[in-house]
Each structure stands twice: as structure tokens, then as C-alpha cells.
Image (tube, rainbow, N blue to C red; front, side, top):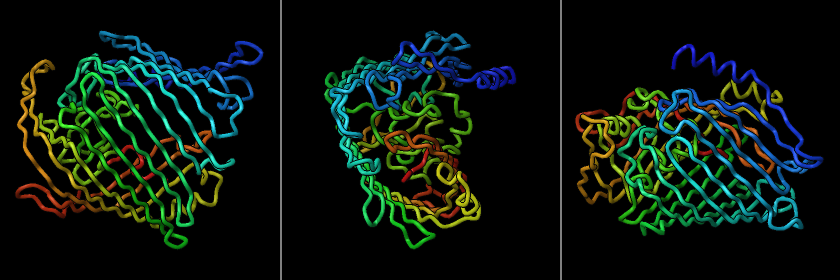
Length: 418
């Protein structure tokens, strides 16, 4: 990125945030924001939050927005994000709000505009016991494929109208915390449907050990474009846009991504196959699936670092977890895809050979995770997780390769964040 760009980033973060009262009741808070990707270079801007004073993000007219300018001056050097939330009724009990939300963004080569109706049900003041439902419609389009780390995974460059529905459930049972999420997206213009479901359960095993389980299911209709299909070790390409680290090419070093050193959590999450998957992507090849079902498991055991932190005030925000893990998944009905990498012209058509595949893959290893989490006012995770994992066994290493082998993996995001 260069010493000059690094200096700009460091100086920018020395500027404190500040607030302006727009009236006696409405308040806007500003803070500098800076990021980097290969197309924009250093992207500098400002983030701002707006709310009625004294409502603590629980009142009317809630605003979350950002505005940025790219220092490398690409085709579209200005980008923005804005989300405006308005409660439908002022008589809701705490945590039981119904609201309408407007979102609009044009950034990192993707244009997205959405309106949604959302409802939350919460039991008293316990933010860990709740249900949420959302129904929305959006217009969106890929407007610049040069931001994508792997253009092979993106197929549809037309405007599409998406109808989406989602449901979340969180409950603390005697056995431990349980979370579940399900979503369905239907493209009204392309007539394809994608559905996902995820369940997570934590089970204490005595005072020092924990069992963490995650199940994932994903299904897509035959005409679904690549960005909504499923991989083995990574989340759906469309979901990479939800994370600043994976949103655009170059934020993570492309060479390390190509070598399979980084893994973005989500989807089937067969983490032991990250090296295979990303090395294939760097060669212009990818296996994408229309059906996946996977189970991720972790048995957490004590470590001295986390024991020391547990005696301090930082224990509420910081965790260092050590664990052994195992993943197993069934993947079916894939399309093997290849792109001519002798040119960087994204208009070159993808050569696709349809095959019927139904395979089971598994992996196992040991890992260490550092997490910084400051829950929001509804108790939801708000932070980041960084993992170092050694998937020492995979069930299908490839022809002539060993199942047992020392492998390095840096994971971005917690797989099971309970």
C-alpha cells in the first residue's frame, strides 16, 4: 500500500469524533473513516449517526450513513452508504419495536437500494431472548466487476429486483444459548430463489469446557447466478459485500488469498478446504453448488491467556479461545467453471460444463481465536474475530496428496460466535 498511504491512515484516525446538536432534540455524531482496497486506493470519508437525544438508538429518525472519496480516482471516485430507520409505533415496549428501514448504497462497484419492514419481539429486558422478522424488496446491480477479488464468482451484471424475507430466533435454554436464522431471496426479474438456514447451539461441558455447534443449509434453484451459489469453505460471494475486509479486492493481500491462507467464515465453512478452493479460484476454476448441508463443531478448552483475562474487566469484551474443531458437509449439483485468465477483460464469457455431483467432505484440526466484542443496545454481537487454525486432516486432499498434513489458516470472523 506504500508508506505514504499508511501515514495518511494513521493521521486520519488521530482526528476525534464529534457531535453537533441539529436542534434541541436531534443529534448528529461524526467520525472520520478510512479504508483501503486495490481499486479505490485509500478511501477517505466520514461516518455519521443521527438520533433523538436521550433515546440511545431506540427512538425515531435513526440514521447511519457514510460518505467517502477515493484517492486513486477510479471511474466512480465517490461512494456512500445510508440507512434510515423509523419506528411504526411509539407505544412499543422495550425491545419489541416494529419499524420501516430505508437503505441505499453505491460503493465498491455495487449499487443497492432497499426498503424493509422489520419486527422484533423480546421477553422483558433480556436481549438474548428474542425473535425478529424482516420482509423487504431491493433493486441492485453489479456496476464495476474490477472490485471483485474473483470475477469468476460473479455472473449477473443486470439490474435485479429482489424480494427477501428473514427470521432470527435467540433463546437461552438450560443447556446453553441457541441461535437460529433463516432467509429466502427471490429475484423477481430473473425468477430464481435462494434459501439459507443456520442454527447455533452452545453446550457447557463442566466448568472449563464448551461444545459449540453450527448447522448450515443452503439451497438454490437451477438458474441461480454464481454470486448466490455456495462454495465449500467460503460464504456466498454476494455476502462478501457485508464485511469491510472482504468487500473489495486488495483489502486482504490478493497473493495470500490466492494461496488459501485467509478464510472468510460463512456458508458450509469447511475450513480445511480453503487452500484447495482459493488456489483453484486463482487459476480461474471454481466449484459452485446449488445444495449444501454442513455441521461445524468446536470443543473449547482452557488456555492460560484467557484465564488471565477472566480476572480483569476486559473479560466482558475480549476473549482468547482455544479449541479443537471438526467440519463435515454434503455438497451437490455443482457447475465446474473456468475463465480464460490470459486477459483481464471481464466481458469474456465463462465456459461452463454442467456435472451432477453429490459428495461428502470433512476436516479436523485445532485453533485459537481472538475476539473483541462490544454488544449493541439489543445484545447483538458488534466486533470482530481473528482465528489462527491448523486443519491437520481433510478427507479429500486430492490425487497424490496426504490427508494428514500441516496446514495454516487465518480466519476472518467467528464461525460460532455464541
